[in-house]
Length: 446
Ligand SMILES: Cc1cc2nc3c(=O)[nH]c(=O)nc-3n(C[C@H](O)[C@H](O)[C@H](O)COP(=O)(O)OP(=O)(O)OC[C@H]3O[C@@H](n4cnc5c(N)ncnc54)[C@H](O)[C@@H]3O)c2cc1C
Image (cartoon, rainbow, N blue to C red; front, side, top):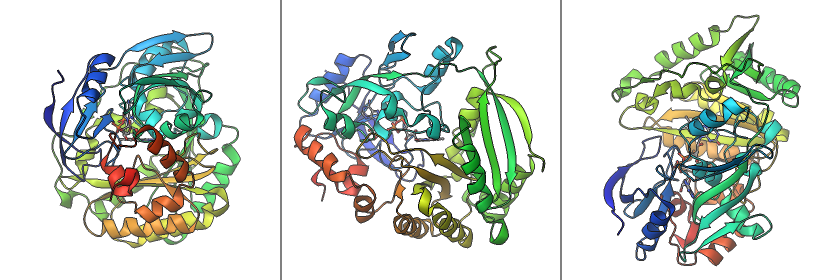
């Protein structure tokens, strides 16, 4: 008998509190039993809860936590293919495979995320131009379906269900195991080059120069800068360094309490952004860093989401196609800088190609991500950013989103009808459900 425990859950942005009954299976057969036990109520898989908005929430219903389904089942060094349970985290992958010279093919900006969450969001990292997103490297997965059966899905066995599950935000079923290809020739250290960028045009030129030649790249933008400084920031590029010695494990700090909302204001954020930019000398610099610090700078501060206080925050992330990126990013940054909403550094990256999933976020273009504390007009601001994203032919990332409208969603994701056709086939009774799906009107949600 499955033990369902009343549980309060939020997304990483903590902008919405939900109450659910949660089960924490230790073995795949307990996962099967938990789903079988939810005949009259909807259910959703949840990994590490690092989705910012409501993708991993199912208010008033059931949630299955996959964190204890965390075994690495096999690894073939010749092909690089690993088979993992869904609760294996990126930290687990790095710890196990980096000493053997392999890395996850695409990694989000936090090592706490799980491979189940990586499949469901088709996550991308700082190497998308070179290596694509996580789903590009998936060979097969075992999917627990609404009728209680588990099927091994490959692109050949069921192309549509495969494409609906990669980036499908947990709505086709629960990934019980996944086989994916790790990339060879990774080392625990990278050489990082940092240079100051004066404005948005400088960013676009620099990215155009490096995106096809470097392995990792990411830009940090001061989202408060305006006028001729609009888009100023720092561009980081990185390559593996031959040093194979494992670095000492990081010693993360913790944010112990929710900060009061007045602590975050334009002045304090402006000062932080300026300090961050000036850290890099005008001539730029080059240094060795551990690979994990390059991938996961925010993980150094546990519970950093408490900085935004009790009301929580929104993350906005969109991608704009290359052809509209210059005008579109300018419009987004001008809108953001023109409001009173204090936003820390924005992240700008390039994405290389469209993903394999019907709802995969990536397309060839530029992606901008930034956080806004809730309140103070943040909702209106995000609605304006949605309209600009649409105007420039872009899309908003569901794993980060809290506010996207149904009409905006339908316009941004052209493969949605195919996704909905698969849902109708594999889950006609809408047993797998999330707050995100309800908000976006998926699965017949009114
Ligand atoms: C600091 C930070 C940095 C980030 N950086 C990036 C980034 O650079 N690139 C990027 O792409 N994303 C990024 N993200 C977003 C994050 O990678 C995704 O939200 C990812 O899905 C989180 O994985 P999780 O295990 O926490 O999943 P959860 O947040 O628990 O769930 C996310 C979705 O996955 C589904 N899911 C989880 N497990 C399963 C399963 N076993 N079967 C089916 N569905 C499942 C859930 O139902 C939900 O819809 C970042 C998040 C944070 C907090």
